[in-house]
Image (cartoon, rainbow, N blue to C red; front, side, top):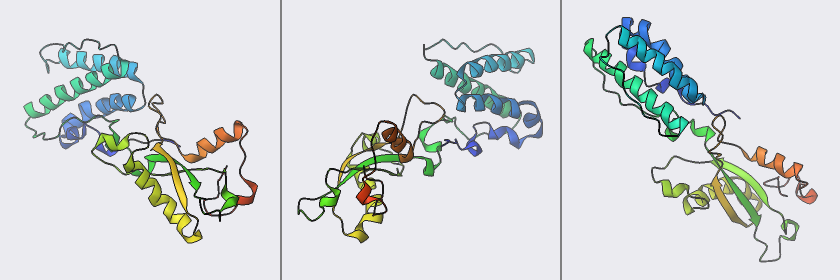
Length: 229
């Protein structure tokens, strides 16, 4: 699975509105922004410094903008990107352009395609009645689309918000079978340390389980929900 940032929302689109600005700066600025999206933070810092030096040599900015290191490479790259944005925005304004946009982190959560944002849930059948013994001691790991919500607390592991979204997904295939179920766990399918592919799917979890020796429950193959272990 590949996570794709929405490149239609590049911060430097305002440069396209003026032919001269587009020819001089747009491609190079977007080139640096793309490095940031790709996780090439050292290249962002390196290329932004070169870009800034060229702007200085053309007297388009009066002095080099100091950017002290925070000790975090990604944060330093983001600061450099913001610095470049502010410089080019001012250059555009000085040339007579009206720039109303504000800088947004290209890796911000809202810029990931909705169908890439997933949650992982663990589901079991509720056999308290004794009528669903075939599901006993089996668990299903599945995924569902995680809707965007402005409250970060709703994204806490096993939050009520995520459990409700998991339930919506489970209801889409379990209700017709009449099998009662329980949600044991739900959390975002997100790996913060993986800069290239932070979001993952249930298929990747199934592969890990298979390598670890877990097998699908034979009697449940082809039944509602399918992948019970």
